[in-house]
Image (cartoon, rainbow, N blue to C red; front, side):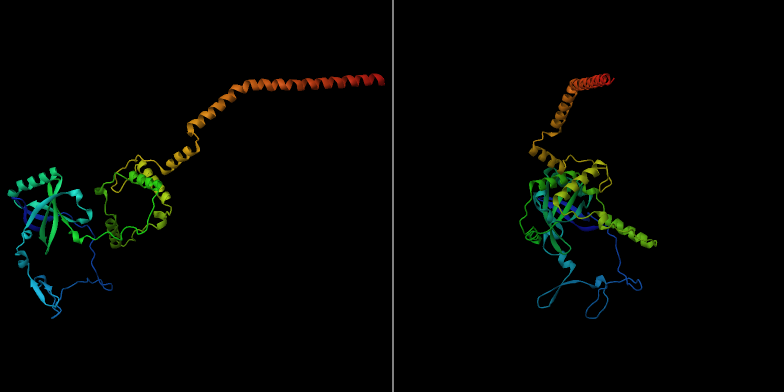
Length: 351
C-alpha cells in the first residue's frame, strides 16, 4: 500500500516509528467526460489568469489571500517546519472508551504499520494493551495541510488510526426530528419490534454493491452492442402501503416466509426463520380473551359431548318411534274390518 504519512506514535515515554496507509479503497466505476459530437475527451487544465499559460503541478504553489487582496505565499517546506509536534508525531494525550465516541464524529480510517523491525515490539505492546483495556488512544496529527483529531484502536493484528471530526464541525440535530407530536400505539411499537426481530442476524460484511455491478453490466452490454437490462417497474417492486399496521404485518410475514423457505439474504447465504409472533396472532388471542370463547379446546370438547349424547340416545329413540307407529297400524286394520262387515250386511239385505 502507498504510504500517506510517516512519523512516530508516542504515548508517555514510548515512541513507535509508524507509517500511515489507506484502510479503504473505492470500487466505483470511473467515467470520463467526452464531447457529445465527436467523442473527444474533455480535460481540465490549470491556467494562469494573467498570462493564460497552461501550468504543470511543479509550477503551482499555495498562498493565502488576505482581506485586502494581498497574497501570502506558503510553501510545503514551511508547513513541515512549523514548531508543532503533530507535524511528524501522533502524540497520545489520553484514552477513551470507543463506544462513548459519537458515531457521527468518525471520519476516514487508516492503517498504522511499524516503520522498521525495531518498532515491532512497542507496536505489539500498544496494540495488545488497547485490546485488553477495551479503550482507544486519543491524539492529533497534521495531515494534508491541517491538524486532525484521531483515535488509535486495536483491530485484530493491527493498529487503526480513525480520523475524527472536531466537535465544532458537528452540526446540531435541531430541525432533523419531526416538528409535530407523533403518538405511537403499543400495537404499532410491538409490530415494529417484531419486524426488527424477524430481520435480525444480518452481517455488514455480507452486503455488496449491486449498483456497481449493474453499471458494469450496462457497460458490457453497450460495448457488445446489446440492449441493457430493463429496470423493474414500480408495480413489480410492490405498491405503496399506506396503513402502518398493514405494512408492518406484511413486512413481518414476508421476512418470516423468506427465512422459512431458506431463501438467500444480501450475501447469498441461507437464512433461518426468526422466533417471532405474527400481528394477526396477537389480534386473535386478544379477541378470544375478550369474547370468552375459551379457545379451541373447549369448543372441541363441547362438540364431542354433544356427539356422544346423540350416540347414546340413538337406540332408545328408535324403539320409541316404533312404539308410536304401532297404534296407527292397528287403527287402520279396525277401519277396514268395519268397512268389510258393513259391505256384507248390505249385500244380504239386498239379496
